[in-house]
Amino acid sequence: MSAPRHLIRLSGLMLLTLLAAACTQTAGGPPPGMTAAQAAAYCTKLSWAYGEYVASGMGDSAGDNDDTDADINARVAIAQCHEGQTGAAIPVLQQELRRNKVPVPPV
Image (cartoon, rainbow, N blue to C red; front, side, top):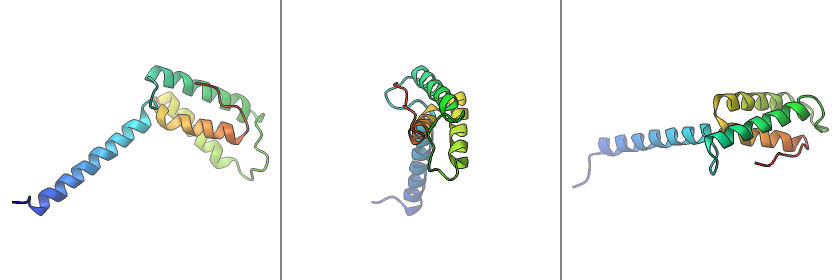
């Protein structure tokens, strides 16, 4: 005897909800292989490097027509660092440092 269709549909929706919650938690917490304290310290280091070399105009963003989106993305990532959402913030800050030809600090 198979399960009624509404139960199958309901269980599928519940699974999708759980998966979405898991993805949100992963993006908000520390990256894999890092404790929350390690991720917070690294996020702070990346934020400092961005502020020191890119936001101050010392990075090499030559060839970029409009840094507005990148700057907003970096500022959001820095705010995420402060909120403990290091899993989402770290990759963005690393990307922005690389894009501006600023060495990414080691972990």
